[in-house]
Length: 144
Length: 161
Figure 1: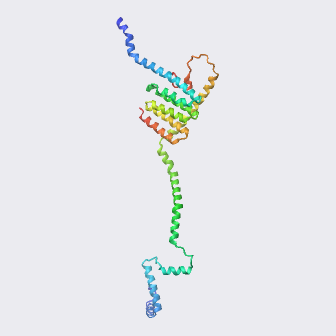
Figure 2: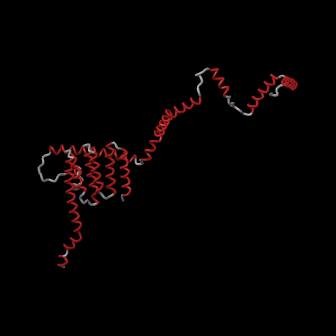
């Protein structure tokens, strides 16, 4: 009976260990992304646009699980708004391009294409916006 | 000639024509003309001699070569008017079928328009929140420097849910 009780922690750690570890990994990734997000936001607000692509790359290079990819899309979308607000559409395209390269799910790719379509539209390039929108629809149709 | 006269009178005229050379010549000329009309000939090419005589009667310098004039007119049309007419026709065709072509080439017109409107509204909302928040931050005293910022209010998607 005592032996069985002493084995309980071992059984528990074997059963739930990987999940706890994955949660820890995700938490550290999230914290880095959170901080980096604020840094990028400040860079844009201060007009330090040239530093933005490398800072954003640090977020996109983080090992994001597929289930959390939508957060990357949200971040890229928010930076896009800020960059457009500061009349930096070229930079917005660069950020969205890097984000597109870092995500795996078609759903995420579709959302990023929509963002690029929006940037093109804001630039007045309607043809490019429509093409990007069509690309988004293609990704959407591939998504499960 | 048209068999319109009574028989005895026609016979009398026939005999006269046979005897009188002037009337015979006139009759033969008329008969030839009738024959041409009946055979359906609508155009008789005048001989060069006739044209020369006409030219001489009109006088020098007043006769224009119609073939040359027609050629000149055709060349002027093909040089100036034809491109203009073609361009106008092209513009008209494009104006008529352009919208239809555009609609066919981009089938997601409505979705595209509604997404763009919604996206633009979202952008304005975000920028407004951001500007309002930075203003609030400036006036808000920070009591605890180690306090975790409530950054999700500021749009940070990585903040803890």
